[in-house]
Length: 67
Image (tube, rainbow, N blue to C red):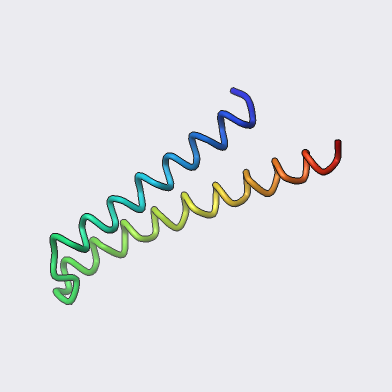
């Protein structure tokens, strides 16, 4: 898989994770301790996807600037 394809896939995963966080938030009362604990797990997954995407984007930018 090319770096560009890897970055696009990571961006899609981040977007999907963000959508899941927002969908859960809109459907549930996150003030409820059980719902909050589920929301935090989703949020952490989104954050992990975001960080991975940012790392890949930084790598791509660095490679581009090295050319």
